[in-house]
Structures are given as C-alpha cells and as structure tokens.
Length: 401
Image (cartoon, rainbow, N blue to C red):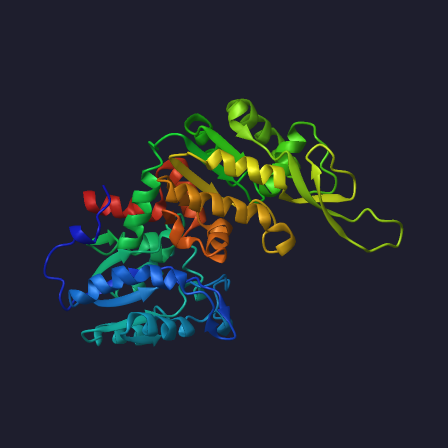
C-alpha cells in the first residue's frame, strides 16, 4: 500500500514539507491562463498548513531542455497560487541553490515557498542523484501530489523520495488512484472510449479493456487507422501505417465489442486544379475519397456513441473524437462529453482520462458534471495498463523499508 498524508507520523508542526506539485500550466502574456492544476493542489497544501507545516513546492513547466528559459519561469504561478491559497507565497530560483535552501529554512508559519522550474536543470529528467540530493535538502519529509508526473522517473519524482523519509502521496494523488482503481472491477455495463491520434500510446490499455469492457468506442485520428486496418479507404486522413498490425490485433480480440465510426466529418480539398476552396461535409466511413481527410466522427456516429453510454454503469474516456481545437470538428468530442455528463446524472461512475479529453470536458463546461477528471493523461494510461507508476512505486518501497 502507498503511504498517504494520513499515514505520516505526528509532530509535523514546524517541519518543512517538500511537495512535488504539477504546475505545468498554460501561460499567456506572463499570466496563468488555466489554474486547474493549481487548484487541484490546494487541498494538500491546506492540509499541511493547518498542521503548521512549511510547504516547499517543486514543479516543472514546459520543456525548457535543461536550461533556464524566462518564458517558462514559475514566477507567475507563485502569484496565482498566492491568490488562490490566500497565503504568502515566496519564490526562489534556482530550485537547487543555496538561496532556495536558505529560504526553506527561514519559512515561517503560514508561508509557502515555490522553487523555480525543476526542468531548468539537466539533471531533473536524467534523475541525477546529485540533483536529487540537493533538492532533498529543501524538506524534512516528502509529499508527491503531482499525479501527472508519476509516470516519469525524474529527480524530483523518484530521486528525492528515495532519499527523504517519510514520503507520502498527497490528497490529489490519493483521489486519482481511488478513481482509477474503481475501474479494475467496474460496474456493468462498462463502456470505454478512445480517441486521439496514436494507437501505440494506448495499445496495452486497449488490450486490457478488450477483456474488461462491454463496448469500446473509437474516434479521433486513431479511428482512421482502424478503418484502414479493415481495408476501408481513408483518403488523405492521418493514418498510423506502422500501427495497422496493432489495430488488427485489437479488432480480432475485441470483436463486436469494438465500435468504429460509421460516418465521419471530412475536410475536402478535392476541388479543381488551382481551386483552394475547402469544404466540410459528412460522409459514410466507407465513402472517403482521395483528397478528403476525416477529422471528426459524423452525426450518425455521435448518436450511436451517445446511445452506447445510455444506461451504462461505468465509463472511461481518453482522447478526443476529432480535431476539436477546430470548431468545425468539435461536435463529436462535445457529444461524447455531454453523453458522459448525462450518464453521470443517471448514476454512472465516469472517469475522463486527462489530456485533450479533459480539456474538452472543461471547455464544454461539464467538468463538474462527471465523476472524475484525471489531471494526467499519460500517468492515467500507464497506471490503468500496468497498475504501477515509478513515482508511486518509490513511495511504496519507502513505506516497506
């Protein structure tokens, strides 16, 4: 079992709690554009502050390539956190320097310290032992509340807890694991929806769910690969040629439980020579012509997928049904989001598996109308596929030692 906050020993008052959070948030003109991930960390931070712990926070932001990048500084996040937490939030850069160490030791009651982007240092993604040691100096015990990073064996996720004891999972991680754990033995009917582009990223989970789910609904660009695997012409649609054998294996294993689009929304660029006019239309999945690119599921498929969710007891969804960033191809994704909300209202347990599908649910204004929205798509997929995560395993190992 993984140690949680409630398993930590008494007498934490005055101690420095080194907390790995996931503040990989979008920035716009130097301001936080979406504070969802910051908000998700607040329960753990408040839990610690109520016990007079001095939280010291570590996070990454973007992919700066192991060197400082002012555009990816966490300084704007410190300001946003202060407003949401209603506490004094100090900021220190770099995250492993003497200034950060001094600031952590001087933290007073009710104060929080956010250190600069961990990925400004090359040793972070390399899980460098020396960097892990420098980071571990910032706390007296460790809490990992960054679910979206648990599948990464980095210095701040696996290196630090291997050195710092006690270590525990935060409240956000605990909620994520409870939600995903409920899908191990789901109530039935259990419906799963997969979208997005790459089958390879989700193949192990798709294989597991072919044994567990009553229906698997496929959309997004990966649906094109499945259609091509059946010998259906897909025009100029995005297809993973190297994954056709994987698609065939899933189709063979899932049989009639696999549902593919029967119609698609296409972008048609097949006008006459020199004609740059593009048109969007709905065509049958077997009638995609050269010059057409399927970018969303069509009206008939939307209705079929929504009907599949009607009366379900459990639902898991990862990946959009189309190119939902383009309003012309967002209807399929939003239709599944609405169907998930309706299923939840009817008593189903619904989990949105992070990434673009989570963004779509938020964009549709339905985040509070589903049971759970994961804060990390990659971590959710790996945990559901294998039941393990590097950042979680090290917490369990420390508990046993």
